[in-house]
Image (cartoon, rainbow over all chains, first blue to last red; front, side, top):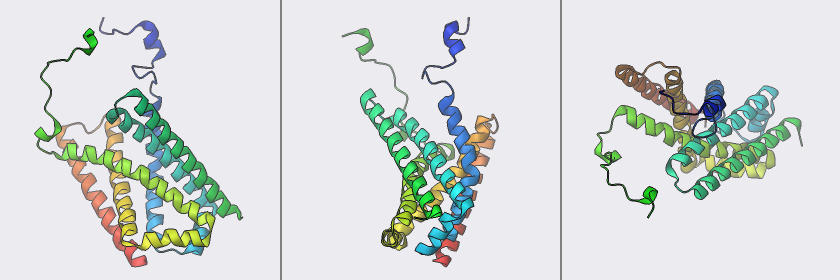
Length: 127
Length: 132
């Protein structure tokens, strides 16, 4: 009897955080996706040093860049939000404060992700 | 006072400042610190495309900050954080897969992360500043 968990708890497989593997797996999945995206984005950012309005918009609005940029920003924000959640869980004490901060991080990530996506599409499709 | 709330008089493990700084622990906390910085940096980069979509005037305002000393520190710092977190993140993924846990390997991969992220940072700064 090395396992003290009930058979039901083991079958559910959700662990003490009641969240299972979802957070851990999502963090790894976004990490792997971000390897090529961040390399591409860092090189692009350096090459765009000093780019004026027209150059920057022409770059953002090209179809391939639009796809990669939306991916980089949304996947990056998702990965960042998952990481910040762990930091908050580790260092912020008190359930109310913890919950409020995690919610705030999620809201900010979604708002900026959506706003950036709309901005990129607007530049690409004109208007 | 309930049993759960009674103060516990057990010996505590030594606090962080007791330990001699090691490469492994320094890189570990740096991974967290750069992760937090990159999360804020992601908002900054999202703001960049939002301003680019808004108007030439808004973009010029944003660009004038990027060109200032503070802006260059932010962007240059972002690049270092990105390269470091990327390299050390790959190191973490290898650990997740069960590789590189021997002390010798952890130190070797740690130094590789330091070298690669510093070289990438310097190269990107030199190229970026030449293009400005």
